[in-house]
Image (tube, rainbow, N blue to C red; front, top):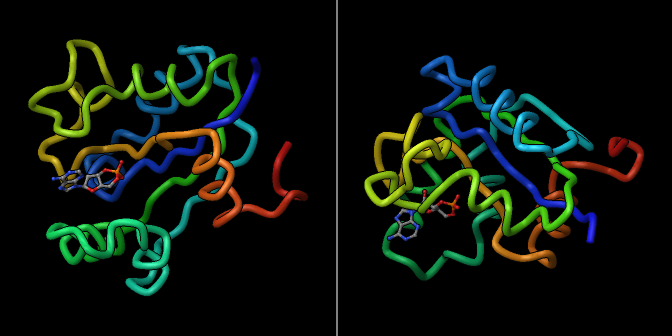
Length: 138
Ligand code: CMP
């Protein structure tokens, strides 16, 4: 079914000048942009967004990295959006990401892994609503 996922182009990919290339890969992959923003998270907002990982050892690193510079947040629409987007971006650790995937091409480490992609339809909805009101979705 045609449905939605949520993505962030992370501070590393923005700082390294990859916004344009990544958006091109996303649209070439058949995803329609439903909503998009360029912003910088405060540590508080980053902590809130990643609250599900609060108990993980990497939480502090993750929050400080995600608030270290501007990001692009976007809601994307496509048939089978969540699963197909995870295929397009590749494994969380870029060392394991398949050839041609966004993380293989643009990411440096498991923290600085270029992009986020929702892991379920339910989380896609929650994560998109963290950044966008209904009036900002087209
Ligand atoms: P993301 O999909 O944005 O969700 C949580 C992030 O935590 C993940 O991408 C990684 O960038 C980061 N992270 C750091 N260490 C780990 C780990 N061991 N397992 C999963 N995610 C990790």
